[in-house]
Image (cartoon, rainbow, N blue to C red):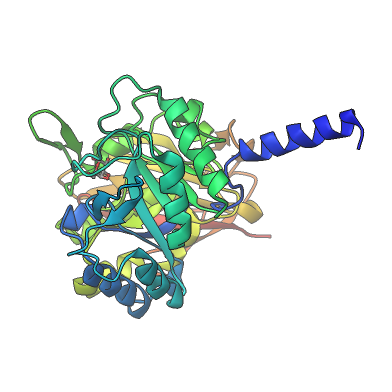
Length: 401
Ligand code: GLA
């Protein structure tokens, strides 16, 4: 082989190492994560029960795949530095748990941290990135959420790149979820590093307002939504803005859960349920498995929606969908019911980011109400309806020939 060919091969090999596993998240990842409801109370029975419930509830068939164990699954590192799960909480080991999850047609996710310790004080991956990636691959992990606690002095882009390269070297395709809270604007640099990146600090199970924990705050649904301003241009297939895992079923009202879920779908957000799947109510189950609404999130174009209009406390959001369709969501942020009359013809839409526009005076669309499942007239007449406090009306617009 001549030198030139060898050089080209070496460069190609180095480049393929320096890339994330592509194509693992062409639509926003869907699954379940332990943190929002269980925090550090995780063990293998809980995880197996969640996998069972994901299947029995119809969530798997609606598209949910990943069962992710967040913080606190860890035991200690052995004398060689390899991490092991907590032997009391996970006596059968992670490979057995992965097998259980895989046999159900689901995928297995795990959590670590770029720093010395996780947020929950368990061993972090700092200095053990390649070893941890090898261990996860051996356990047949499919998804890694990688947190940002205890990283003082580290460069975020570099730290996440190191783990990307470690995963790549370990050889198993693993979705890489960056959890850096938006501190270093990951939307500017993480596209080739991970498949999704958190844009904010932690969500809380409340609709409006925030929770003050003293040294940090967690944010209600509306505050997280407002923090997404300006970020939609950075997201797309295989690289998503992540406004955090869902709080559906964790104590908000049914309206609030519906609005939260709808808005996450308008944002093309990863849909990671965060409730107790084994004990969820039928109302929660129906929200999480509404296929029409999920289809808006999972639309193959992967274009994040945008706020088109605000009047009083009602926001009107649009999301371009494939085949010339659109999703529209009216969000009532107020504590009171709102009556709306939306005159399509008077409100043309033009979206620079997607290059899509609608002139309702020249085009006609059928309207489908995605929460009632009914046809709701066409765009030839103003759309008049009442929206309960903290609720939505969500429509799919289908061009009428
Ligand atoms: C951080 C993350 C959360 C969760 C906890 C675990 O706060 O943002 O999503 O992973 O750590 O300790």
